[in-house]
Length: 172
Image (cartoon, rainbow, N blue to C red; front, side, top):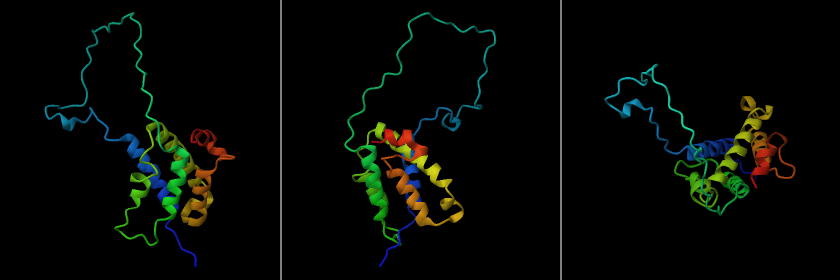
C-alpha cells in the first residue's frame, strides 16, 4: 500500500522562508517613526551651506568578523536531514503535529552556524526558483513530480544541478 505524503514542495518552501526569517532575526529599524512619539516626519533638513569635513587618516578596518564557531552539522547534512523530516510528516497531518521540531529544534538545522545557514539558504533559494519555473510545478501540476524536482535538485551533488552549480558546490 502506498502512502501519500503532503506536498514536499510546500515543506521545502517553508524551509526556505524559515531560513530567511531566522537569518533576518528581529531587525532593529531606526526608521520606525512610531518608536519616537515626538517625531513628526521621517526626513530632516540638510543645511546646504554646511561643508562636509574630510580627513586623511588611515581607513579603519570595519570588515573584521570573528571566525564562526565550528558547525556540528554541514549544509549538506542539513539538507538530507530535512528531506527525511519532510518524508516523515504524516498524511493527513494532524493539527497538533509539531513538524517544525524535526527541521529546526532537533538535529537538522539547530546546530548550523551562520556560514552554513547562508550556504543552505542560497542553495534552497536557487532550487525553489528553478523548480517553480519547471512546467511540472506550474499551475497546480503533478505534485509528485514537483516534489521530485525539489528533492533531486537539493540533493544533487555529482553532478550538481546545472542552474545551481555554485550554490551546490558551496554547500558541502
